[in-house]
Structures are given as C-alpha cells and as structure tokens.
Image (cartoon, rainbow, N blue to C red; front, side, top):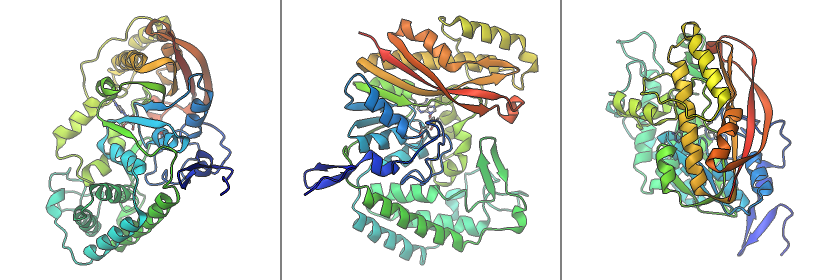
Amino acid sequence: MELAPTGHWVGDDICVSFESWTRQRKIVSIGTNAGAEPLPFQGWHHFKEAFAPEVVARAVRESERPVTRCLDPFGGSGTTALACQFLGVAPTTIEVNPYLADLIEAKLTAYDADDLVADLGRIVRAVGTLRADMSRFAHMPVTFIESSATERWIYDRAVARRIAIHLEAIECLARPHHRRLFKILLGGMLIAVSNVVVNGKGRRYRKGWMNRRTAPAKVDALFRQRCQSAITEIHAHRHRRHRGHTLLRGDCLQQLDQVDAADLAVFSPPYPNSFDYTDVYNVELWMLGYLDGSASNQSLRHATLCSHVQIKREFKPAPAGSLRLTRALNRLRRERDALWSSWIPDMVGHYFYDMHQLLTKLSRTLSTQGEVWAVVGDSRYAGVQIPVARVLADYAPALGFCVKSITPFRSMRVSAQQGGQQQLDESLIVLQKLD
Ligand SMILES: C[S@@+](CC[C@H](N)C(=O)[O-])C[C@H]1O[C@@H](n2cnc3c(N)ncnc32)[C@H](O)[C@@H]1O
C-alpha cells in the first residue's frame, strides 16, 4: 500500500489530511471569511466571522512547543477544532451560543454514512405524513410567524409549517447525534427560506418580500439537498488524524477552569465593535427551540463577552497596565456626548477587563512555551481608535507572556453605526507563555 502524498495511514484507514480538506487553496488573508465557504463542512452555516483554517495549521507548524492539545475559547463555527482533527491535534472548544455549540459538535462527531442516509429517508417519509404542531412557535416574538397581529413577519405561515414538520420528523430519530446534525442542517437554511437577510448590520426584510414569497416546497427540497451534500462530505472526510474532541458549552471565562492543559490556543474573540452574536443567530436560536422566552435570550446576552451595548451590564473598569488604553478611554469619555450610546466607554473598558481575565486564565492553562494565536480587530468610536492587539501586548508581560509578533493583515470598514468608511486594522497577535 502506498501513502498518498496528502494522506496519513492510521491502522488500515487512510486519513484525510488538512491539505486535502483545504484543497491546498491559495488564500489572500488568514482573516475572517477568507473564502472558507466552499470548504467541506464550512458551508453548513454561512459564518461570516470565521477565520481561515490555515491560521491553525500555521500555528501548529510554527509553535516552538510540539502541539498535541489545542484550545479555542471562542469556537464560533468550529474552524480551530475541525482543523485540529485533520492536523492530528486534540481540540478543546468553548462556545457560549447553544446553536453554534451544536454546529461545532455536529462537524466534529463521527458518523456512519449509511445510518445517516437511512435516517434521512425516515425524515423524508415522516414529513409526508406528519401534521405541523405550530404551538412550538407560540412563545416566539410576534414578528416571527405570519399572523394578523403584525404587518411584517419573518416566516410565511405555510413555510413555518414545513419547518415545524421537519423539526418533528428530526425529533423522532433514535440517535441523539443524528438529531443534532439534521437540526443543524435545517438551521443553516433557515434564512434562505425566510423573508429577511442577515448581515453585519443586523437583520432586514428582503426587497419586495411581500410579492416574492418562498414556496413551502422549497423547505423540503433544500433540506434534502443540503443533507445529501453534508452526508457526502462526512463520508469523504470520515478518517481524520484525530477523531475525538472536547466541547464545553457556556461562557469561556467560566469554562476555562475546566480545561486541564493545552499546548496552543488559537482563537478570534468578538471585537469591541458593538456587534452582538446573539442577534446574528436570533432566528436560528428561536426557530430551533434554543430559546424559550425573553429571559433565556437575556441570559445568553449576559454570558457573552462584553463587546456590545445591547444590554445594560454592571460594567467593570479596564485593568491597569496599558497607558494607551487609559488615554483612549479618557478621550472616549470626553466624547461621550458625541457617541451613539453613552455606554460605549464603559463597554470598551469592560471588554479589556474580560480579555485580561481571559489571558490570565490562558496563562494558567497553557504549558511553558505554549502559544496564543489570536485574531483581533480594532474599533473606532467618534474618531478614537481602540488598538486591541497593542493593548493586549501591553498586558502580556505581567500575565506571564512575551509578545512574539503582531501582524496587521487586513483592514475592516468602520460600521455605518460607527459613522464612516475609514479602515480599521485586524491583526494576528502571537504570545508565548514564559517559564
Ligand atoms: C469571531 S467568532 C469566532 C469565529 C471562529 N474563530 C471561527 O472561525 O468560526 C466569536 C465567537 O465567540 C462566541 N462568544 C462570545 N462570547 C463568548 C464567551 N463569553 N464564551 C465563549 N464564547 C463566546 C460567539 O458566540 C462567537 O461564536
């Protein structure tokens, strides 16, 4: 037997290598959304904020310490963990959003493709006979499902009925990991069959949505097509150099205490740009039953890193140690009246309180010479720049790290909410744990 150039033998199986998964593509940037969409698994849910898996491969390759365990405290779409499985590294991932946590776990789990095909057949047969129980949507915000109580709605009633029937059919499956996978595959198409689009600026109705309704049959056709393509991907990539994973659900600042040790941490935290991930995944969270009322929505928002002003929190002050942050916060406070939310200076201060805590916990978790590879983004409010990578570098020495490099690699546009089109840096910062 010959070893394929991009594969590795494990027992009698040839493993899919990282390079086969990424098809040795050329990428222009390792930053967010660097064309990862066409990669197998990464299309299950369009995740704009995902970084390129190549950043994980580089981190593993360039780490001075051999990497057997890698940690991502902000799992998102699971890029780090999935890349680790192909690289032969044991991944530990933390994610606060329960829909995204399920998305990650669905990608990392091992399946038997024949069993999946059989269960897909069961779902398809069941949706032909089941009746929709619309009471599952009763607790949701009134604008979600067409009704006489509202003038605009995200789902036409007939479409919502097809979604409900699919959920019921999925819930009848015996295997919990199959239920999770099919629910996630349904989740990834929910926006496509809705009357809205979601982007970095939030959710808005499609142009002329009233006259361009989604045919209910599209739910059935799209679901079947997405499942068939996902099963093909799963089967083609079933042999990975590392097959296990650890997924912790909840706030990483709490969950990190459960992580014993790691040789490397590769992650991208939310940026302090007032973008709340809970909003971005609101449709999936409600429609798939992850939220059961406004209280659960609020508690999820509270558990996320302090990077937005959508909820009032008890804002904690930024830890001392960065003169450039103190100066930026003073300027922000002076500009408070010109800001679109007077909470912004406090939010930015608390953002660094959280990031300081994160680095403190990572310093305890990482082995000596273990590295942190973090993709971070700057923000700007009322002309005041928040240089995130530089501030983290200021904190690093007191927390037991040396700064190996800071590489700006892309410029982001300032959001419309932040009032302009100026460019902002996104950077890769690499820290190394000292003895
Ligand atoms: C920029 S995204 C990560 C993207 C990821 N690198 C990828 O490639 O898919 C940040 C993620 O952090 C999650 N998050 C926010 N606050 C968190 C917290 N306190 N603990 C764990 N995850 C959190 C968000 O839900 C979001 O999925």
